[in-house]
Structures are given as structure tokens and as C-alpha cells.
Image (cartoon, rainbow, N blue to C red; front, side):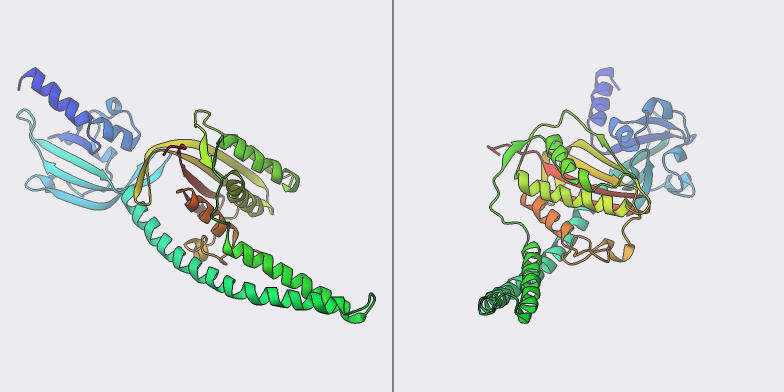
Length: 352
């Protein structure tokens, strides 16, 4: 093979998004393209001449099984440093290079596809539940207004000091409380005024609000990417969305204390729903609280679902709605001592 042709194919392999690894007859790694290095978060030079099982432990019992035909393994989990497990599909093919027999591993990252499917399914379920709650809230709001109006008329007919006024005051306060609850169930109004804002100024403002109610045994660490450009948001609505997440994290750590880490990063070519965005700002809230019970985890963004006995179950629902109004998304993962809420916010500009 001419040298120029060899360089051409090597550049072609390096430009692929599919991870490619070639293993020789001694079952040792001889080549990895850049996509494979990025997937495994490992230096390709350090892996050369290492046994293939370093990358693919327990993929197949014996590599010789793939001597005559291709083997494809779906739903295989690889462990990536700093990222946990990533789901992939892997195809092993017998492949000869320059007269030497070996095997070609083609690895397809299916994690994003799974995430998109799961998000879509959860969102449809969430929309159905949200629609039901909002319909009920609308139906409840009208009679509440009537009860309040009638109560106020009765209050005017009584003299100060009348015994019945005490009971009418109770009715009035409870109706107002239920009205506020219904308004929260209905969520934020869609008429957003969006302006360009710095996400770190947004977070700073939220932290100012909670500073007075934060227990002394809870500490906040800020890990920011200063290169994140300004985002087009409804500032007041986004304050409410992030405030709910920060308050939840603080409440989860009230009993034993702990650390809340707020981290900002940029993701490139990131898919949210069915749309792929060139740039997405990610704000992560990581707390050391007790975690979210498995029994409610899949439903935490539904209205009226809460893992707290005193909670209304509206905070996360409202936050998710606000992010949806910004074409964004909140994704949660939870384990005791490590609960994370990732806020994904597409970077948009006025002319987009």
C-alpha cells in the first residue's frame, strides 16, 4: 500500500466518531483511533501492546470465537474514569492488516440514544400528569374565588369582636393558602421576557436569597467555567427554577450537614429531546444528602410527587416547566450521599 494511501486511511479513521480498535494475533492492542481514546478517556499510546481485556473485560469469554465470524454485543457497559459507566454496542470482526491476522473492534456509544428515548418517554408521562393536575387546578380555582368572595361579604356583616369573625378569618386564610397552592400547581406564566444574562450572576443571585436560611453545617463550593457565554433567559423565572433546586439540596442535608457543589460546564453538540444544539450550558447541583428514594425517583418531576413529608411536590415540577420553556431540561441522578441535578440550557441568541 503506498504511503500516501496509508496516511489517507489513517486520517479517515481518526476523523470517525465510531471508536475503532485493532488487536493483533497475540490479542494485544495495536491501534486505536481518536474516538476510542475519547470514549475510554485513556491515552492511546499507553494502551499499545496491552491485552484487549484492559478495555473490554468480560466482553466475550474467548476472542477466538470471533475468528470465523463477527460477534456483536449490545448493552455492554464500559467503565470510564470520571464518568461512571457508559452503554455501548461492540462488534468484533476477524480482520487482517498487512498480512497479519487480528480482530477489529467497532464500538458505538449508545448512551445518548438511550437517554433521548428515556427522556422522551418520561416527558410524555410527565405531560399527561401535568395536564391532569392543571385541569383540576383550574376547576378548583373558580369555586375557591367564590368561597373567598362570600367569606369577605360575611366578614363585612359582622361587628368587630363578634365570635364568628374568628372562624371567617380561618376560612379566608385557608382559601388564600389553597389559592396560592393552585397558582403554584398551574406553574409560571408563558409570557417570558428573555434577556442575555451571565449564568454565574444568576447563580450568585440565587445564593444570596438562600444565604439567610442556610444552616451553618452546610457549605457551598462553586466550580465554574468562566468561558460560558451569556444565555438568553427569563431571569426571574430561571431564578425560581434554580432556587427550587438549591433549597432541595439544602433540605436534603439539614440533618447531618454536608457540601453542596455548584458546577458549570459547556457541552458541545448536545442533544435535548429531538434537537441537537451546538452549545449547551450545564449547571450541576451536587449534594451529600440522603438521596431520593427509588420508589419516587422516576416521578420526581411530576406535580404533587415529593419525597419529603412536608413537601407539596410542586418545586421540581415548576422548575422542569421553566426549563422546558427555555428548550432546556433537568436530569437527576441520586444515591445516598451523592444526588446530582443537571440543568441543561441551550445557548441561544436573539437572532436564533
